[in-house]
Amino acid sequence: MSLTGGIILFAVIWFMIFFMVLPVRLKTQGDVDEVVPGTPAGAPHEAHLGAKVKITTIVTMVLWAIIAAVLLSGIITLEDIDFFGQLRR
Image (cartoon, rainbow, N blue to C red; front, side):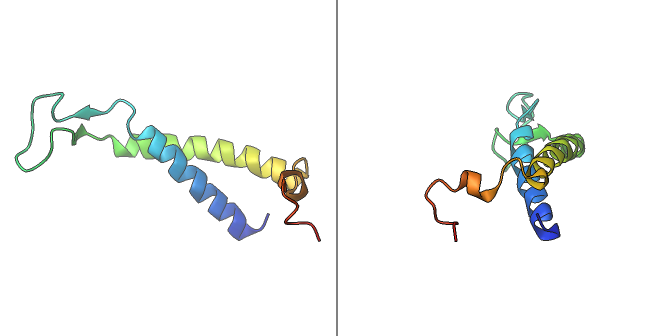
């Protein structure tokens, strides 16, 4: 895996985890009955984005390390996941 591949893998994992963490413990404006005029009732009341970014980054670092270790060790190669024989020379 190259440096660029590692960065792209990290970014993809980070955004996938971030979108899973976003709705966790979400309180909407409709839930607390404090709807700001001009916004929908489903808009977040308190997003807690800082904490969610930290959680996402920690989980991503762990998952990225595991995936990178598996890929770099050669346990799983491209030939193992080439189900249709398109990558063989």
